[in-house]
Length: 367
Figure 1 (cartoon, rainbow, N blue to C red):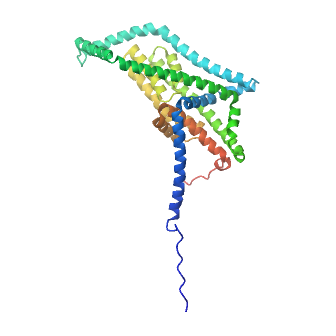
Figure 2 (tube, helix red, strand yellow):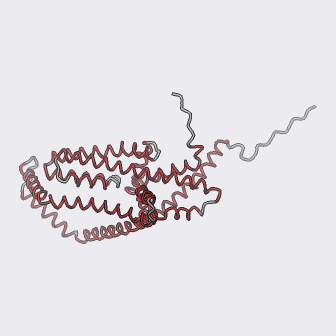
Figure 3 (cartoon, one colour):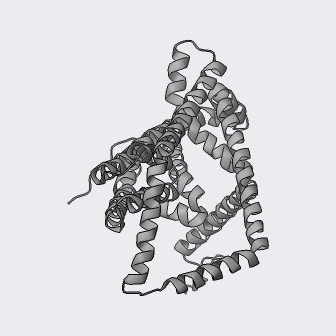
């Protein structure tokens, strides 16, 4: 007679499906990575007075790298080549500001007369237009505004002091960015070599290859950003010339420089252009210039940046568009400025770690 075989007892944890255990393993690892990223983000935010200028210095270094390589190819000393690159950049910025200032000074008397005439026309329209606001009411409003200013002197002084502190922090950050850019241009390889000493020896080759790819992607991004700024400036220039606005080339220079600052730069340049149109020819021209500015901003945000920047950094245009939105939501202007460079470097760096895997051709999906 055969005795029944004893039933095998289930192993501890065997009742948990394998898929759930795998998901749990991934989950705690993802949580650890997220915690590390959050800690790094907190540190960067806490030391933003240093981290933001250094990040700007990295972007400036990427922008000036082609010129720096050219000068070094001519056997210039690294420090001299770096100083020359910074000098060229400063001369261009100062030249643009000088050109804008010269046109403003030359045409300011005429603009001031037109502004006074436009203000008088506006006041007359308030009295004779559909609102029927009499002069006595305007005087009452002006008196109320004056009383509010007198009563809020302390608050206004505090705002002005806070703005002064912000201006001081800006110039301090600018000095840090310029100094860091000089050292990055002059001895960037040496600085990177010092950092990579912390990397284990068997990862050095892959890390160096990945860093080279990431840096090349960042340089391509800055070239594409220059092209985007140039297209924006040309759009504003064409609109200003079509409407015969004063100082069209000053608007071109202002838009080109401001386009490197996402969102705020375009709004600033468009506001100046619309104000000139309003002062010179009235509200109709201002509305037309506003439509041109909105068209240029929409073309930049939904076409130029996703297409040109995505192609330069090997990112899908949708990824560029979503990255700009997420960066602006998380960190405002600084986030919108840095999110695409960070994505560009990170994607190229990851691909450079294992080029045989990422560079091989993919099988096409059936249609």
